[in-house]
Length: 140
Image (tube, rainbow, N blue to C red; front, side):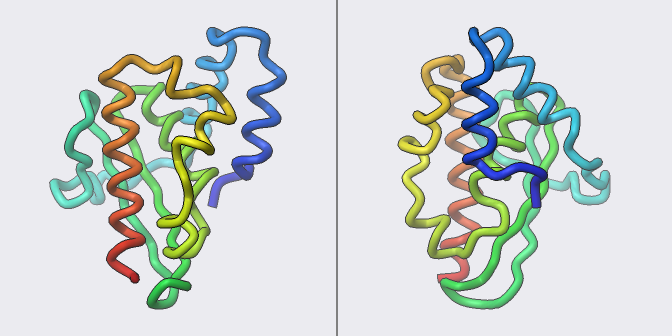
């Protein structure tokens, strides 16, 4: 579980006046993430479609649509690690059904993130979201 909820993250984003400060905040979120075990950096956890190397590993409690999904991740790029932290605040600890029902574009528009990412970073973010939604879909 992450230290802050997505609503708290949105409130924190509103404290910053410009996107340079917001990028630094995202990078700091990534730096605060717990270490990701090297043993989990495998082809099975590697997310395809990202320019940077990204690994996501799920932990599932329960079964079916009400299964609780938590995940951890890592990247070789600080900004991407921060994006993983953003996705954790949105998804980790939610039920599979909630994850599948979440309108990611709408939620991320609350922090205007997509408008400030390069096309490559946007593709990587979409690949990470696809992987997380895949964790949930496997439970339904």
